Length: 310
Image (tube, rainbow, N blue to C red; front, top):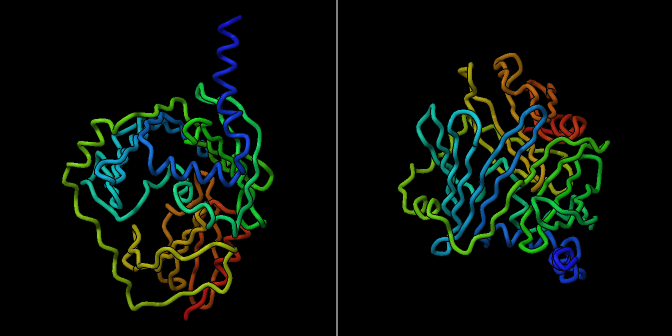
């Protein structure tokens, strides 16, 4: 009986300590934890028919964030971040670096950013509590303000505020993507692998490709909160022609837009939808526009139709 009471106290103590926090405050604490804390998580990423076991390690060395991501299945594939430089290390190609303040593909970048920026597109609502990875967790729902994007929900560790589970849900509440932590270790100091990564001399950052001729595209409509992150020119696989590439994001959802002169450039097969991606193709004037992203197809169609040259 005494052991049972002790277990209940361990579970309920953080519950009582966090009673007064709003949903936004929970997310702000998560953002700070993802940037400031030393931790190691073993997790499973579920996307459509893909299951990926991953290990993610994060810490701070000399006031710089250092992170390491390892894919546990298949050929070796790792990513290392030191400050605002991410280096990708794969078995079949030389290591290369890009400028980025997060390792993409695990959690939305906004989770470690300014949570207030999400409020133009989403509202935050507290849900229930449950136990995940052996730890008590608080559910926060991130609900879209319109029908142009999907909804999300995240369970946060009630002690460290680090995420224990993340779901992306379609408009009819179907699970599109999930990150599930199976073990979370909060550390007192950065592990040796991060210290070695910090000392390592990584390849220089790859410079962005120059834009041919410089067609300047603008969007006459975007969902509230979406903004242009990148405009450049991509020479895609199987084609000698460069196409314009525009990256859009609202902090949670990303949209990639490709523009080429109609009939001159064949859009590659790699743009076929996979892992829950939606796709829309439109002909706008003399151009073919392809929009890809984890948002409703209707959103991609409207974004593609709204593009024009400045």
